[in-house]
Image (cartoon, rainbow, N blue to C red):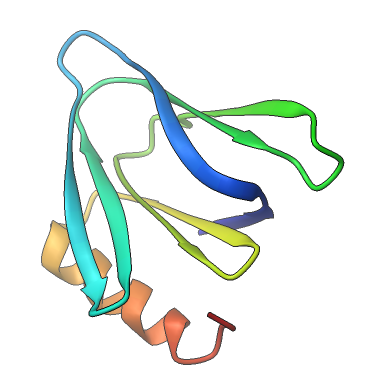
Length: 96
């Protein structure tokens, strides 16, 4: 689980060969992206306004979502339902 500050929305910039992504709903007002398969790169504006990239660590599939000025990322070998449960438990303590 990682988190970082980002201005605006995070963009999935690059998906490797067999990587796919889809939008998922974490809460009525919070959407995220589930990325499966190969490597990927996520782009975002840091708090100072510079473009930054966060690359996959290849641990497993990845869930990415935003809450307030924070972007969260969970990489795991667990199925989506289990990762969503973890994300939702984190959302209970994170600002929106």
